[in-house]
Amino acid sequence: MRTSHPQAGEAEGSTHDPAVILFSGGTTGQPKGIVLTHRNLIAEGLQVAKWGQLGGGDSILAIMPIFHGFGLGVCVNAAFMAGSTSILVPSFDAASVARLLRRKRPSLLVGVPTLYAALSQDHRLARIDWSFLRAAFSGADTLPRQVKERFEAMVQAGGGEVRLLEGYGLTEAVTAIMAMPVDCYREGSIGVPFPDMYAKICRPGSQDELAIGMEGEICIRGPALMQSYLDQPEATREVLRRHADGRVWLHTGDLGHQDVDGFFYFTVRLKRMIKSSGFNIYPAQVEAVLDRHPAVAEVCVVGVPDPVQVERVMAFVVLHDKAAVGEHTARALIEYCREHLLKWSCPRMIEFRPELPKTRVGKIDFRTLRQQYIDQEQTP
Image (cartoon, rainbow, N blue to C red; front, side):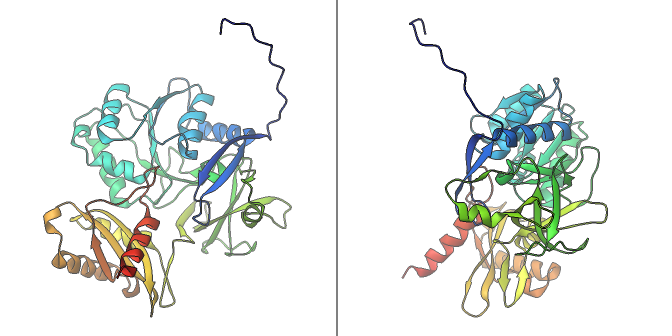
Protein backbone atom coordinates (compact mmCIF):
# COMPACT_ATOMS: atom_id res chain seq x y z
CA MET A 1 0.00 0.00 0.00
CA ARG A 2 2.99 2.33 0.48
CA THR A 3 4.04 1.99 -3.19
CA SER A 4 2.81 4.36 -5.90
CA HIS A 5 -0.26 3.36 -7.87
CA PRO A 6 -2.49 4.99 -10.50
CA GLN A 7 -5.69 6.70 -9.48
CA ALA A 8 -8.74 4.53 -10.09
CA GLY A 9 -11.28 6.03 -12.42
CA GLU A 10 -14.84 6.65 -11.30
CA ALA A 11 -16.91 3.54 -11.76
CA GLU A 12 -19.97 3.74 -13.95
CA GLY A 13 -23.04 1.81 -13.03
CA SER A 14 -26.67 1.95 -11.99
CA THR A 15 -28.93 0.51 -9.37
CA HIS A 16 -30.16 -2.00 -11.98
CA ASP A 17 -26.71 -3.57 -12.44
CA PRO A 18 -26.06 -7.05 -11.00
CA ALA A 19 -24.76 -6.93 -7.44
CA VAL A 20 -24.54 -10.60 -6.47
CA ILE A 21 -25.25 -14.08 -7.81
CA LEU A 22 -26.69 -16.48 -5.24
CA PHE A 23 -27.22 -20.15 -5.98
CA SER A 24 -30.42 -21.88 -4.97
CA GLY A 25 -32.55 -24.86 -5.89
CA GLY A 26 -34.98 -22.48 -7.60
CA THR A 27 -38.52 -23.56 -8.40
CA THR A 28 -37.44 -26.83 -10.06
CA GLY A 29 -34.94 -28.20 -7.55
CA GLN A 30 -32.03 -27.81 -9.98
CA PRO A 31 -29.32 -25.38 -8.77
CA LYS A 32 -29.45 -22.05 -10.57
CA GLY A 33 -27.49 -18.83 -10.31
CA ILE A 34 -29.92 -16.09 -9.27
CA VAL A 35 -28.81 -12.66 -10.49
CA LEU A 36 -29.79 -9.96 -7.98
CA THR A 37 -29.31 -6.25 -8.59
CA HIS A 38 -28.32 -3.42 -6.28
CA ARG A 39 -31.95 -2.30 -6.39
CA ASN A 40 -33.10 -5.75 -5.26
CA LEU A 41 -30.80 -5.70 -2.23
CA ILE A 42 -31.59 -2.09 -1.30
CA ALA A 43 -35.35 -2.71 -1.53
CA GLU A 44 -35.15 -5.91 0.50
CA GLY A 45 -32.99 -4.26 3.17
CA LEU A 46 -35.35 -1.32 3.57
CA GLN A 47 -38.41 -3.58 3.67
CA VAL A 48 -36.99 -5.93 6.32
CA ALA A 49 -35.67 -3.05 8.43
CA LYS A 50 -39.07 -1.39 8.39
CA TRP A 51 -40.94 -4.63 9.11
CA GLY A 52 -38.69 -5.64 11.99
CA GLN A 53 -38.59 -2.06 13.31
CA LEU A 54 -34.78 -2.24 13.27
CA GLY A 55 -32.80 0.66 14.64
CA GLY A 56 -29.39 1.66 15.92
CA GLY A 57 -29.86 -0.06 19.25
CA ASP A 58 -30.77 -3.44 17.77
CA SER A 59 -28.60 -6.46 17.10
CA ILE A 60 -29.33 -9.60 15.12
CA LEU A 61 -27.67 -12.98 15.42
CA ALA A 62 -26.55 -13.91 11.88
CA ILE A 63 -26.78 -17.68 12.14
CA MET A 64 -27.77 -18.16 8.49
CA PRO A 65 -24.78 -18.35 6.10
CA ILE A 66 -24.28 -15.23 4.01
CA PHE A 67 -24.03 -17.18 0.74
CA HIS A 68 -27.80 -17.61 1.22
CA GLY A 69 -30.37 -14.87 0.62
CA PHE A 70 -31.69 -15.17 4.18
CA GLY A 71 -28.29 -14.62 5.75
CA LEU A 72 -27.12 -11.93 3.32
CA GLY A 73 -30.39 -10.05 2.84
CA VAL A 74 -31.78 -10.09 6.40
CA CYS A 75 -28.98 -10.86 8.86
CA VAL A 76 -26.40 -8.57 7.25
CA ASN A 77 -27.74 -6.13 4.65
CA ALA A 78 -31.01 -5.16 6.36
CA ALA A 79 -29.25 -4.84 9.72
CA PHE A 80 -26.53 -2.56 8.30
CA MET A 81 -29.03 -0.40 6.38
CA ALA A 82 -30.87 0.22 9.66
CA GLY A 83 -27.66 0.96 11.59
CA SER A 84 -28.06 -2.24 13.63
CA THR A 85 -25.37 -4.70 14.70
CA SER A 86 -24.92 -8.03 12.91
CA ILE A 87 -23.39 -10.72 15.13
CA LEU A 88 -21.76 -13.20 12.76
CA VAL A 89 -21.72 -16.92 13.51
CA PRO A 90 -18.89 -18.43 11.39
CA SER A 91 -20.28 -21.97 11.56
CA PHE A 92 -23.36 -23.24 13.31
CA ASP A 93 -23.31 -25.53 16.29
CA ALA A 94 -25.62 -25.43 19.26
CA ALA A 95 -22.84 -24.74 21.77
CA SER A 96 -21.49 -21.65 19.98
CA VAL A 97 -24.98 -20.24 19.42
CA ALA A 98 -25.88 -20.79 23.06
CA ARG A 99 -22.68 -19.00 24.10
CA LEU A 100 -23.38 -16.03 21.80
CA LEU A 101 -26.97 -15.76 23.00
CA ARG A 102 -25.78 -15.58 26.59
CA ARG A 103 -22.94 -13.12 25.93
CA LYS A 104 -24.22 -10.88 23.13
CA ARG A 105 -27.95 -10.85 24.02
CA PRO A 106 -29.26 -10.02 20.51
CA SER A 107 -32.61 -8.29 20.21
CA LEU A 108 -33.62 -10.25 17.10
CA LEU A 109 -33.25 -13.88 16.14
CA VAL A 110 -34.01 -15.32 12.70
CA GLY A 111 -33.45 -18.80 11.33
CA VAL A 112 -34.88 -21.99 9.90
CA PRO A 113 -37.13 -24.39 11.87
CA THR A 114 -34.29 -26.86 12.50
CA LEU A 115 -32.40 -24.07 14.28
CA TYR A 116 -35.26 -23.45 16.71
CA ALA A 117 -35.72 -27.19 17.21
CA ALA A 118 -32.05 -27.48 18.20
CA LEU A 119 -32.16 -24.43 20.49
CA SER A 120 -35.30 -25.57 22.30
CA GLN A 121 -33.65 -28.90 23.14
CA ASP A 122 -30.37 -27.40 24.36
CA HIS A 123 -30.12 -27.59 28.14
CA ARG A 124 -27.59 -24.71 28.15
CA LEU A 125 -30.35 -22.30 27.15
CA ALA A 126 -32.92 -23.46 29.66
CA ARG A 127 -31.42 -21.32 32.43
CA ILE A 128 -30.60 -18.04 30.67
CA ASP A 129 -32.44 -14.71 30.89
CA TRP A 130 -34.37 -14.34 27.62
CA SER A 131 -35.68 -10.84 28.32
CA PHE A 132 -33.21 -9.39 25.77
CA LEU A 133 -35.09 -10.91 22.82
CA ARG A 134 -37.55 -8.55 21.10
CA ALA A 135 -38.57 -10.64 18.08
CA ALA A 136 -37.94 -14.06 16.55
CA PHE A 137 -38.77 -15.15 13.00
CA SER A 138 -38.65 -18.52 11.26
CA GLY A 139 -38.46 -18.97 7.50
CA ALA A 140 -37.17 -21.06 4.57
CA ASP A 141 -39.27 -24.08 5.58
CA THR A 142 -42.55 -25.02 7.30
CA LEU A 143 -42.44 -24.37 11.05
CA PRO A 144 -43.82 -27.38 12.99
CA ARG A 145 -46.27 -26.36 15.70
CA GLN A 146 -44.39 -28.37 18.32
CA VAL A 147 -41.09 -26.60 17.56
CA LYS A 148 -42.79 -23.23 17.90
CA GLU A 149 -44.40 -24.18 21.23
CA ARG A 150 -41.20 -25.64 22.70
CA PHE A 151 -39.14 -22.58 21.78
CA GLU A 152 -41.74 -20.14 23.11
CA ALA A 153 -42.07 -22.11 26.35
CA MET A 154 -38.30 -22.01 26.86
CA VAL A 155 -38.17 -18.23 26.24
CA GLN A 156 -41.12 -17.61 28.54
CA ALA A 157 -39.52 -19.67 31.30
CA GLY A 158 -36.48 -17.38 30.98
CA GLY A 159 -38.45 -14.14 31.32
CA GLY A 160 -38.99 -13.47 27.60
CA GLU A 161 -42.28 -12.67 25.91
CA VAL A 162 -41.69 -13.11 22.16
CA ARG A 163 -43.69 -15.31 19.85
CA LEU A 164 -41.91 -17.24 17.13
CA LEU A 165 -43.43 -15.79 13.95
CA GLU A 166 -43.33 -17.23 10.44
CA GLY A 167 -42.28 -15.52 7.25
CA TYR A 168 -42.03 -16.48 3.61
CA GLY A 169 -39.62 -15.80 0.81
CA LEU A 170 -37.29 -17.24 -1.79
CA THR A 171 -33.91 -16.35 -3.22
CA GLU A 172 -35.54 -15.24 -6.48
CA ALA A 173 -36.69 -12.23 -4.43
CA VAL A 174 -33.48 -12.01 -2.32
CA THR A 175 -35.16 -13.65 0.66
CA ALA A 176 -38.21 -12.80 2.81
CA ILE A 177 -41.01 -10.89 1.09
CA MET A 178 -43.75 -11.34 3.69
CA ALA A 179 -44.05 -12.16 7.39
CA MET A 180 -46.33 -11.87 10.38
CA PRO A 181 -46.28 -8.36 11.88
CA VAL A 182 -44.28 -8.19 15.12
CA ASP A 183 -47.36 -7.24 17.15
CA CYS A 184 -49.72 -9.75 15.51
CA TYR A 185 -50.27 -13.49 15.32
CA ARG A 186 -52.50 -15.67 13.19
CA GLU A 187 -52.33 -19.44 13.45
CA GLY A 188 -50.49 -21.05 10.54
CA SER A 189 -50.06 -17.84 8.57
CA ILE A 190 -46.88 -16.66 6.84
CA GLY A 191 -48.16 -13.09 7.20
CA VAL A 192 -48.74 -10.28 4.75
CA PRO A 193 -46.42 -8.81 2.09
CA PHE A 194 -43.75 -6.26 3.01
CA PRO A 195 -44.10 -2.62 1.84
CA ASP A 196 -43.96 -2.37 -1.99
CA MET A 197 -44.34 -6.15 -2.41
CA TYR A 198 -47.55 -7.65 -3.79
CA ALA A 199 -48.83 -11.21 -3.77
CA LYS A 200 -51.78 -13.08 -5.24
CA ILE A 201 -52.96 -16.65 -5.70
CA CYS A 202 -53.20 -17.96 -9.28
CA ARG A 203 -54.40 -21.21 -10.76
CA PRO A 204 -51.22 -23.32 -11.15
CA GLY A 205 -49.76 -23.03 -14.63
CA SER A 206 -51.80 -19.95 -15.50
CA GLN A 207 -52.19 -16.22 -14.84
CA ASP A 208 -55.78 -16.60 -13.63
CA GLU A 209 -56.21 -15.11 -10.16
CA LEU A 210 -58.27 -17.25 -7.81
CA ALA A 211 -60.91 -16.15 -5.30
CA ILE A 212 -60.10 -15.58 -1.64
CA GLY A 213 -59.71 -18.87 0.21
CA MET A 214 -58.97 -20.97 -2.87
CA GLU A 215 -55.67 -22.82 -3.04
CA GLY A 216 -53.30 -22.08 -5.89
CA GLU A 217 -49.80 -20.91 -6.77
CA ILE A 218 -48.33 -17.97 -4.85
CA CYS A 219 -47.27 -15.24 -7.30
CA ILE A 220 -45.38 -12.11 -6.23
CA ARG A 221 -44.13 -8.85 -7.71
CA GLY A 222 -42.17 -5.84 -6.47
CA PRO A 223 -38.69 -4.31 -6.41
CA ALA A 224 -37.04 -7.36 -4.81
CA LEU A 225 -37.63 -9.67 -7.81
CA MET A 226 -34.45 -11.05 -9.37
CA GLN A 227 -33.12 -9.88 -12.71
CA SER A 228 -32.80 -13.40 -14.11
CA TYR A 229 -31.40 -16.89 -13.74
CA LEU A 230 -27.75 -16.82 -14.81
CA ASP A 231 -27.44 -17.85 -18.49
CA GLN A 232 -30.84 -19.55 -18.44
CA PRO A 233 -33.28 -17.38 -20.45
CA GLU A 234 -35.91 -20.10 -20.86
CA ALA A 235 -36.00 -20.86 -17.14
CA THR A 236 -36.21 -17.11 -16.46
CA ARG A 237 -39.20 -16.71 -18.80
CA GLU A 238 -40.88 -19.67 -17.13
CA VAL A 239 -41.01 -17.99 -13.72
CA LEU A 240 -41.00 -14.27 -14.57
CA ARG A 241 -44.19 -13.67 -16.55
CA ARG A 242 -45.93 -10.49 -17.65
CA HIS A 243 -49.59 -10.63 -16.62
CA ALA A 244 -52.63 -8.85 -18.03
CA ASP A 245 -52.01 -5.92 -15.66
CA GLY A 246 -48.80 -5.20 -17.58
CA ARG A 247 -46.56 -6.06 -14.61
CA VAL A 248 -44.03 -8.86 -14.25
CA TRP A 249 -44.95 -11.50 -11.63
CA LEU A 250 -42.77 -14.26 -10.21
CA HIS A 251 -44.43 -17.69 -10.23
CA THR A 252 -42.98 -19.21 -7.08
CA GLY A 253 -43.91 -22.86 -7.53
CA ASP A 254 -45.43 -22.79 -4.03
CA LEU A 255 -49.05 -23.58 -3.19
CA GLY A 256 -51.02 -21.52 -0.69
CA HIS A 257 -54.10 -19.40 -0.13
CA GLN A 258 -55.14 -15.99 1.17
CA ASP A 259 -57.83 -15.21 3.76
CA VAL A 260 -60.34 -12.37 3.74
CA ASP A 261 -58.05 -10.14 5.83
CA GLY A 262 -55.13 -10.45 3.40
CA PHE A 263 -53.05 -12.96 5.39
CA PHE A 264 -51.33 -15.65 3.34
CA TYR A 265 -50.83 -19.35 4.14
CA PHE A 266 -48.22 -21.68 2.65
CA THR A 267 -49.19 -25.27 1.88
CA VAL A 268 -46.38 -27.00 0.00
CA ARG A 269 -43.95 -26.63 -2.87
CA LEU A 270 -45.55 -27.95 -6.05
CA LYS A 271 -42.43 -30.06 -6.63
CA ARG A 272 -42.68 -31.64 -3.20
CA MET A 273 -46.38 -32.53 -3.19
CA ILE A 274 -46.92 -36.31 -3.17
CA LYS A 275 -49.39 -37.77 -5.69
CA SER A 276 -50.58 -41.18 -4.55
CA SER A 277 -53.49 -43.08 -6.14
CA GLY A 278 -54.84 -39.81 -7.55
CA PHE A 279 -54.74 -37.95 -4.23
CA ASN A 280 -52.60 -34.90 -3.41
CA ILE A 281 -50.74 -35.39 -0.13
CA TYR A 282 -48.93 -32.59 1.69
CA PRO A 283 -45.77 -33.83 3.48
CA ALA A 284 -45.89 -30.96 6.00
CA GLN A 285 -49.29 -32.16 7.29
CA VAL A 286 -48.00 -35.69 7.84
CA GLU A 287 -44.81 -34.38 9.44
CA ALA A 288 -46.86 -32.19 11.79
CA VAL A 289 -48.75 -35.24 13.07
CA LEU A 290 -45.64 -37.38 13.54
CA ASP A 291 -43.83 -34.50 15.22
CA ARG A 292 -46.51 -34.48 17.92
CA HIS A 293 -45.71 -38.05 18.91
CA PRO A 294 -43.56 -38.00 22.08
CA ALA A 295 -41.10 -40.56 20.68
CA VAL A 296 -40.23 -38.50 17.59
CA ALA A 297 -37.31 -36.05 17.64
CA GLU A 298 -37.21 -35.25 13.92
CA VAL A 299 -39.11 -36.36 10.82
CA CYS A 300 -39.16 -35.93 7.05
CA VAL A 301 -41.91 -37.29 4.79
CA VAL A 302 -41.31 -37.97 1.08
CA GLY A 303 -43.03 -39.70 -1.80
CA VAL A 304 -41.15 -42.72 -3.18
CA PRO A 305 -41.90 -44.53 -6.47
CA ASP A 306 -44.62 -47.16 -6.42
CA PRO A 307 -45.70 -49.25 -9.45
CA VAL A 308 -49.38 -49.19 -8.46
CA GLN A 309 -49.92 -45.92 -6.56
CA VAL A 310 -47.37 -43.87 -8.60
CA GLU A 311 -45.95 -42.70 -5.24
CA ARG A 312 -46.33 -43.97 -1.71
CA VAL A 313 -45.82 -42.02 1.48
CA MET A 314 -42.64 -42.76 3.42
CA ALA A 315 -41.41 -41.22 6.65
CA PHE A 316 -37.80 -40.95 7.77
CA VAL A 317 -37.74 -40.63 11.56
CA VAL A 318 -35.19 -39.82 14.25
CA LEU A 319 -36.24 -41.02 17.70
CA HIS A 320 -35.41 -39.42 21.04
CA ASP A 321 -34.58 -42.89 22.38
CA LYS A 322 -32.42 -44.71 19.84
CA ALA A 323 -33.01 -47.96 21.71
CA ALA A 324 -36.69 -47.83 20.68
CA VAL A 325 -35.86 -48.33 16.99
CA GLY A 326 -37.71 -51.36 15.68
CA GLU A 327 -40.78 -52.77 13.97
CA HIS A 328 -42.97 -52.28 17.05
CA THR A 329 -42.29 -48.51 17.13
CA ALA A 330 -42.79 -48.24 13.36
CA ARG A 331 -46.21 -49.90 13.62
CA ALA A 332 -47.13 -47.62 16.54
CA LEU A 333 -46.23 -44.50 14.56
CA ILE A 334 -48.21 -45.62 11.51
CA GLU A 335 -51.21 -46.37 13.72
CA TYR A 336 -50.84 -42.94 15.33
CA CYS A 337 -51.02 -41.36 11.88
CA ARG A 338 -54.15 -43.37 11.05
CA GLU A 339 -55.83 -41.88 14.12
CA HIS A 340 -55.14 -38.30 12.97
CA LEU A 341 -54.98 -38.38 9.16
CA LEU A 342 -57.03 -39.55 6.21
CA LYS A 343 -56.07 -43.05 5.16
CA TRP A 344 -54.27 -42.14 1.92
CA SER A 345 -52.08 -39.57 3.73
CA CYS A 346 -50.65 -42.08 6.20
CA PRO A 347 -47.09 -43.37 5.73
CA ARG A 348 -46.88 -46.89 4.30
CA MET A 349 -43.30 -47.24 5.51
CA ILE A 350 -41.12 -45.75 8.23
CA GLU A 351 -37.33 -45.83 8.18
CA PHE A 352 -35.42 -44.88 11.30
CA ARG A 353 -32.24 -42.82 10.99
CA PRO A 354 -29.73 -41.66 13.64
CA GLU A 355 -29.92 -38.23 11.97
CA LEU A 356 -31.39 -36.60 8.87
CA PRO A 357 -29.26 -34.98 6.16
CA LYS A 358 -29.32 -31.17 6.06
CA THR A 359 -28.67 -28.67 3.31
CA ARG A 360 -25.95 -26.07 3.83
CA VAL A 361 -28.55 -23.64 5.19
CA GLY A 362 -29.84 -26.13 7.76
CA LYS A 363 -33.03 -27.39 6.09
CA ILE A 364 -33.79 -31.11 6.05
CA ASP A 365 -32.67 -32.40 2.65
CA PHE A 366 -35.73 -34.35 1.50
CA ARG A 367 -34.33 -34.82 -2.02
CA THR A 368 -31.28 -36.67 -0.68
CA LEU A 369 -33.47 -38.94 1.46
CA ARG A 370 -35.68 -39.81 -1.51
CA GLN A 371 -32.70 -40.51 -3.77
CA GLN A 372 -30.98 -42.62 -1.12
CA TYR A 373 -34.10 -44.79 -0.88
CA ILE A 374 -34.31 -45.15 -4.68
CA ASP A 375 -30.61 -46.04 -4.95
CA GLN A 376 -31.02 -48.57 -2.15
CA GLU A 377 -33.98 -50.23 -3.89
CA GLN A 378 -32.08 -50.44 -7.19
CA THR A 379 -29.02 -52.05 -5.59
CA PRO A 380 -29.02 -55.81 -6.32
